Image (tube, rainbow, N blue to C red):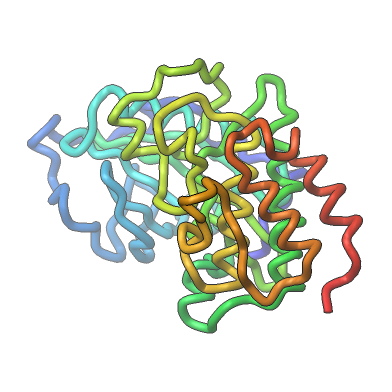
Length: 305
């Protein structure tokens, strides 16, 4: 299937949580196991046929499905099982879909709506063909500096798009697993489950946010502590991801606890090291003021060797 064309729309699937309901019992009476993925061939909401299970989350599974009522187009379907979730989880689930429906960017999957299968919610989005960069590095080894710079360039352009929306959108979970490289070399940012366009107030983090909204080594310190997040927090995570991609090492390996800063010792050009160290600066106020400023600095560097 060709990559998503941002000029197209999918009006067939409105944001109706009870659309395409199937008969079924509520709660613990759901006619499938909450801890096991559905088998290939299972039909959801009367139209979406499971092709394969892509991943498992805390509240459900992620599937590749075929839409039997829309020319057998392949989609990605994310489930929210009421036996594994609560009202807060549903709030985040619906927020993710709302944001993906609102966004229109050639490297962000498009949200197609929420439908219901029995009491389970199913969020549909366009499929992204490619491989996540964490898996690529684990299989093939680190990227070259030129490849890493291209990931950084495209990633910063996506973050600039998010951060300049009204209201602005923070992704809050940028990491190598959520960066997909398609067959044409395009970099996609996926998984907006932690994203938000709500005002992020200081000192309102909690223990739940610490587990849900941070990934060790890639979350900015202020975010990992459950404090206020900023556009610079997303940029920190992109820099940390890039550092992993070009070295194969978790970014925490480069943190100097004595001096309280990242000191990158890697076979990279001086300009790239300086750029990454500034994006990884602590506190957030010492980083670039925006993704655009970091992108301008990157584009001003001499070509990679």
